[in-house]
Image (cartoon, rainbow, N blue to C red):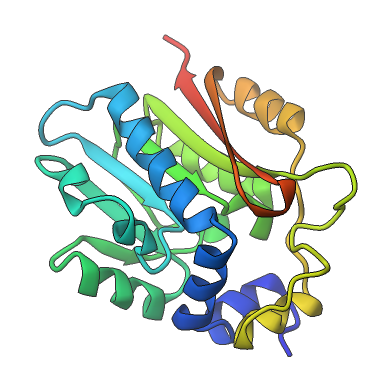
Amino acid sequence: MPQSLRDAWTSCITARDYETHMATIGQAQANAFHIAEFLARIDPPPAARILIAGAGTGQMFNFVSPALFEGLRPVFSDINPAFLACLRQRLPGAPCVADDLERSALRGSFLAAAAVLVLEHINWRMGLDTLARLAPEHLFLVIQSNPPHIATAVSPHRTLPGTMSAFSTVHPNLLDQGEVTAHLRALGYDLAAESPRPVADGKVMLGLSFRRHP
């Protein structure tokens, strides 16, 4: 079994098991629509550079059209190269970069950056520091909000498929919205919008849009 969340994502969890779980609980669908809504909100100009950090397998394209990024210059990053290979199958030619947000080698400027259910699995402050260093005008996060009776990121009554059982030994960490917002404020970003999307087990995929200080 994995010794850390990093181990789980790089050497244990398979794309098939991950996608099965995320679709079953409705989070894959909700988060795909979050990305579509975010891009519609910021209305990026042609050729705008957009970072999707922790893009995973590209499962979002099961629920939204790849045309979402037409005319833009997206960059998809993930810590797991095998997941990115799945993304390329869905979006041939997509610019993909194997990258760790805690030790990122990403460079260049982006109009916008998004990280969906990533911070729960890493040192979230380091992840936000990385994203802020890239200085996007717009920053979009999705974090998980639980009902009071569920204290863990993974619902205890859920039977996880196959390799997703790694989360029985290593556990994602739920985040406090206030702490995330305060950290980003110190990095020069103000909260611009909130967008909750309910999913299974009374949970909410909470979209948080930030904008860099002028």
